[in-house]
Every structure is written in C-alpha cells, then in structure tokens.
Length: 353
Image 1: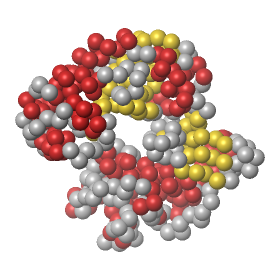
Image 2 (image 1 turned 180 degrees about the horizontal axis):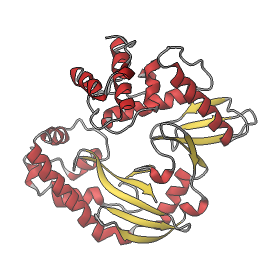
Image 3 (image 1 turned 90 degrees about the horizontal axis):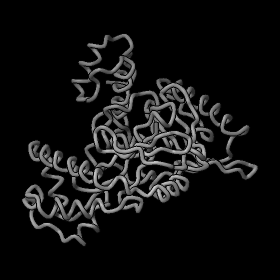
Image 4 (image 1 turned 30 degrees about the vertical axis):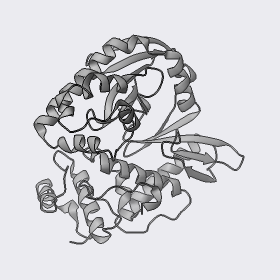
C-alpha cells in the first residue's frame, strides 16, 4: 500500500474494512474524514516506521524527552483528527508532537509533501493570525517549556523584550471545555493526608493488597506513591494483577468508595487560602491558546477567577470538591488515581465551569 491511494473515493464501509485489515483501532463511530486520516497516518508509519504514529497503541515505551521525537509530514494530521480513542500512551506522545510542531511553525519551512502540504499551510496561516491577536507583532523565538518543572508549554519572546507565557490545549474552544486545565498531587498541603489514610485503612488491611505479597512499610509506601511508575515489586504486581478483570473491578470499587468516604469526612477543611495562592502562582499572567481542529481561540483566567471564596460542597458523584471564586466561577476538583486504580499517583484533576 502506498500513500497515493485516493481514500476519498471509497465508501465508509470500504474504509472501515481497510482499517480492520490493517489492525487500526478506534475507527468505529468516526466520520469519514477521521477514518481517512487514520489510514493516512498508518501509511506514513509504513513509510517511516521508526518515527511515525499509528492509531494503535504503541508497543514500546513512549519517548521520555522531546529530543527523541522526530516529526514527519503526516504528523500534521494530529491537529485535524479527534483525540478521542487515542489512549493515554498515544495521547501523551501526540500532544508532544503537536507542541513541537507549534514551536517551529513560524520559523521553519513547512514540508512540501503533496499529500499533507495543505494541512501544514492551513495550520501555519491560522497560527500566524493567532500570534497577531496575542500581540501586534510576531515572537522572535518560541521556547518549549513543557514538563512538570514548568506551569506552561511555551514562552513567547519578542524583540521589545516582552515575554508571554502560553499554555496549549487541543480539542476545545475555551478553558471551561477542558476535562482538566490543571493537575496537582494530593501531597499538596491544602488538603493533605489522603495517601497516608489509604495506606492505613485499605492497603494494610484489605486482602486485595495483602494477597499481592509483602506489603511495604508505610515509610517505603510513601516514598513511591506519588511516582508515575515504580520499580518496587509490590506496585509492579498490583499493576499486573489488574489484567484480571474481576480483581480490577473489586479494587476499582474499593478505591472509588474510599475516595468518596474520605472526601465526605475532610472536604470542609480544605484550605482556600493555600489553594488560592497555588492557583495564582500557576495560572496568573498566562494565555491559553486552544485549537479545536479548525480554529484557534485565546482564553485566560482573570484575577477574580483565581480568588477562591467558598466551598460549595461535593458533586453528585461524591468524588469532587466544588469551590467558588470571587468571579462566581466554580472549580471542580476531582480526586482520582492517575496511574492505576489504588496504585500510584493520587491527584486532583481540576476543571472550571
């Protein structure tokens, strides 16, 4: 198969048959254009298998640094395809690729590949228009700042020494459309104690954990719990055991019920002063640029959005704390395990209404 095949002449049924033959996942329920994009990405991967992405989950661990990522012309389709169904592994690397494309988009020639050049041209033209909405001139450089050490994805630098911190989000028109705009560990002091209590009340007592083997001491447990992955056998076995669907279902129920119980007991003592300070530190003076597959939008938090004045209560599901800002906006703080149910990295996933 070559990338020259004209998929546009095929019916949706024919396109889905091709996807099935090539073991491409996630095409069910998609529009014709999205299915075609998935097939084109597959074709590009066949031509450059060491760097291109397919729509299937990667078989090897994703690159840990952006230096290990190579952009190919077909990657431009990542801006024009739905992010749904990508899976966490693919989603992470796809976002890194989008960010790397944007970093160089103003300063490097776009690929002249006949199949993808129009997509590159469309994105570059619209990105130039976006930049002129941020400021009345183009940045001289765009530094990529993504990672846990930073609170933004890019730093736009201008000839007059102006600096603009920028956060890129894909698949939304405004911040309130995002499933989360910010994530922070439960280690944060505005409402501490979740992981410690989970160890005392669940890990050290429940057979779903004791059956995994030797339970680590609380001290050793706390050294690992906020990591995204652990080399300690207890945590490795806990993750591996999730392949057993019945075990996973039981542990999911156990962990989710504990979250609800813990929040019900503790949400009223959430420290709004500390949380406000954190919000201002991480979210003030930052522009959000949002791409929704066909257009750019700019959004940001105003000062009164970041001044928290009251605890509304818990959501109907009992797994989120709702707090209200001076502006009237509400923040929903979903408490969840980010790396395996009841295993690693309990965190607050924060969205805004």
